Image 1 (spheres, helix red, strand yellow):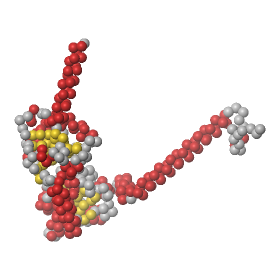
Image 2 (tube, one colour):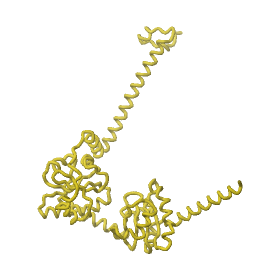
Image 3 (cartoon, rainbow, N blue to C red):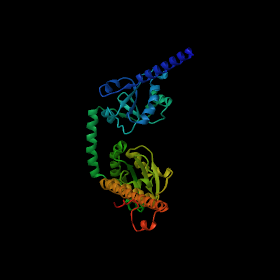
Image 4 (cartoon, one colour):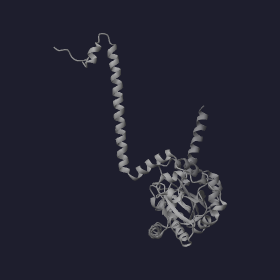
Length: 355
């Protein structure tokens, strides 16, 4: 018995040691160490938030990856960045959700969107990332400068843009009833990919206007105009649809002006349409209209919600009081010696006797 306990405790100690070694192999990157560390080697980095459950589930996989024997003879290292504590690092990479996984190599970074399994990650970090699109890694000062420049360019482009802002109330007249073709971007203001696509979208509208083409460029803010986005089944941002002759085509190609123009001109003819523009159902119209109104009138929506809850509680209390009063009345009628006539005339049974 003692021997079994000894072996069990030894095994537990061994496993705990392995876990500790694995965690120690994942480098905790901070603002003070990040730029210096990534100068050498290829880095597989997890951007996370401490409160994120998906990040916690991925923790063991990242730990196992960091000590995998197949990386022993390579220059690959595994790191992690806490985006709550190190916000500036995550801004440089455009991190919008957690966990986000990226490979960094020689001043460039690559997005990883594969399976969250050790083998898939291993294949990507060893060579797979070279096949993907890379972005230049900027210092925080360079990032801030570029962000300010992009904002200025976007404001200027917006002033000269021909992009039409489509709303729930204008969609049918502008798109469904119009014979012109439309390329439409469904977006959310907080979406980083949507913001990066904005200059391209403005430029596309200018190019199509200069060519005097039949196609128009539009955009729908799905945080405000849910009714339109629901009709198209939008569940991610940005989502791009081309509408021509009443048929919808989903665009999934490169997000540059030339590729978009080619798809609008001839490319969509080789694609399979999603179907015609769907009509809006009564139920979805009511629900989405209420949500749109609540989004636009937040204070009034909160006040209305509190008022409705108060009315509901008042009605519920009145009903309970009414039901309980009837029940009490019935019980009193059944008690021996109780004069029902006195009860009917409103006299209280519990009225104290006069002294």
